[in-house]
Length: 289
Image 1 (tube, rainbow, N blue to C red):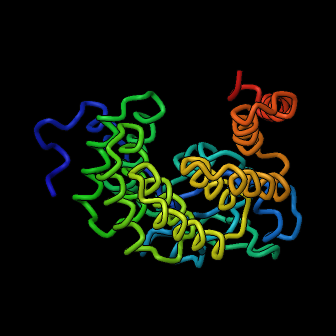
Image 2 (spheres, rainbow, N blue to C red):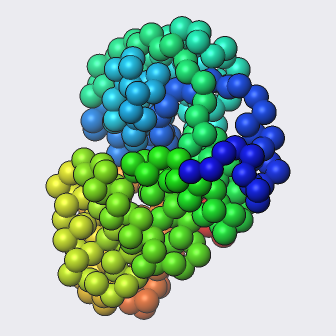
């Protein structure tokens, strides 16, 4: 477990613990076009709740997985950092108004903010390290988060992502399997496990995970993931069908256009490949060059 002043703890971790800050207790990501179907066609602005920390302020207030947070304390939420900045400015113990969408219905929750936890601070620092490309250090910090709470599906999930970047595929697979044990209702975890299994040449198991993800989510990401598994296994026609389906479900997915463009390039369909790749650049000019 260890105390906050353990030997070997990074200086920035110690500094991070210096201030008593507030915590909402959610893991979020920006909403995408895929989420519009579930939330009644509202503009895609807000933060989708991926998980809620048990016993946290969000949990007590009744915020649930798959809700979309629109505002907190009248501050609009569009990027993950917006929530972090907004909450950290608010006093611990204060009551705040959160506006959200739940399956297209607008709701308002009153939330009493709690002090930030050791685990949450580990997640914050790991995210900063990951963004800076310091994957080994991020892995160490997330391991500390797991020592602090061995039942944190989010910590295992985040460590699996870091281990993927470090090409520790077997260790990453073990992490994502533990996350699924803890949160079997999260469809994206099966998609993540599918990618690890595909990298380890376990194609049949990877496709089974994709089928689970498609049943649970049915979104563009699920079909794109199965397309990648088919592509890696050399099943180009099946991969193309899945990339087509992904683009039909979310025409604004630059990644889906890019993946189909690469497949078509390898099929020597150069004109079609160029068109797909150009569309990817148009949709996300900062991601593709």
